Length: 184
Image 1 (cartoon, rainbow, N blue to C red):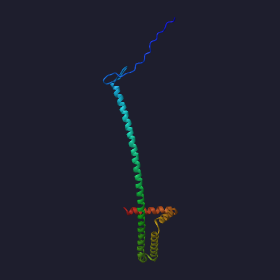
Image 2: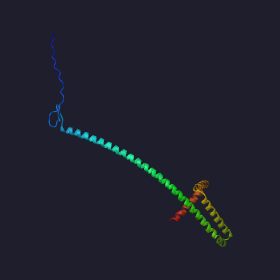
Image 3: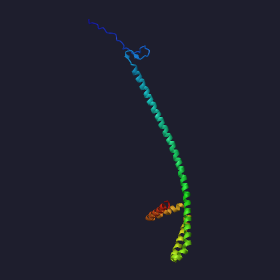
Image 4: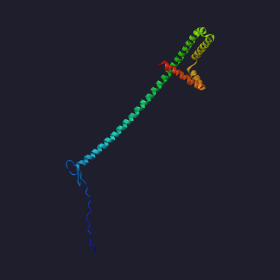
């Protein structure tokens, strides 16, 4: 007869249990140090603080974007209001300037006309006639300027510049030189 094998009873692996100590820092079968628990706890707190900081940063970024959008909208509305006011004021000043130029041309026409007799005596009748013709032309231009709107004047100016750009550049240079001398 064959010999019977004896089998050992199977034993369950031991479960780790917490030792009954004051600090409960040791696990039976695996001693833990106080330092590793503190390090682990510090890492957990540090990670939580980082996550909280990230969330706070995101909230601040969102709030900054919201406020920037509000300020941008306010600036746009104010800019549109100022642009409208500026256009209105520029139109008023242009009309006033047109009227003053017309008055100036009329005044210059009167001065030339008043002095035409003296020009006849000193330089001759031919030059006196030139002065009178110039006076009439200035007076007619002053009346035309008064009668036309700013839009009509702008259209005529564009047309004359397209017709003769060299003359327009020359006239602009002369006017610029005149204003430079005037405001020195």
